[in-house]
Image (cartoon, rainbow, N blue to C red; front, side):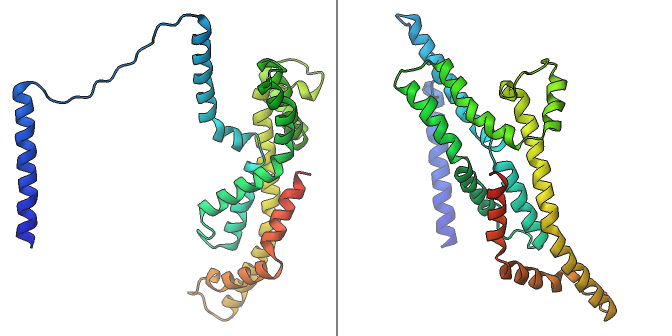
Length: 253
């Protein structure tokens, strides 16, 4: 059976080499033709429409960054990671589950904001009631309101002063290039505060288990091996996932 398989592979290789030599000898080696052409246009509007499509594709490629830095996703995924680390369950739940849960929680929390953007900016623009510039100005207001509500004044002042844009009359006038980094570090700070509170009960369990093992002279047994079932049991008894998700949702209200 092995000899037959080797013979077939050798036959296929020989046929491929003969075919390549035949094409090379006749100068008809099949090489794909790659070209980039710009067709003639009858009006400048066609060029503008093509540029708009290119810009739209570029914006869509940056959509993951917008979801991470302009929504509740950052706080949620960091807190969920803290929960998993506090439980000491290594890769359980896996990263795919945590990211999927964080995405759906983000859609749930941000749905009022996006509904407002859709009704006040997107739909009027699609119906040609407002221009593109007006749609952008109207659409960014609900997003800015959400971000400003979750941003610490100290963090916002840091980037306003560093950008040297001068005095801002109203917080709503803050440019997104200044508001986004301020919102991000505020979200990280809030997530770490929640993570600290999550760690406290599990650290107590680790300390109690380690003290008991040391008093029994069981120095070679890792405390985490004994404390892990108790951590999971505590998390189940208090309905941990419900409490964590509820706290995350309420933190944005």
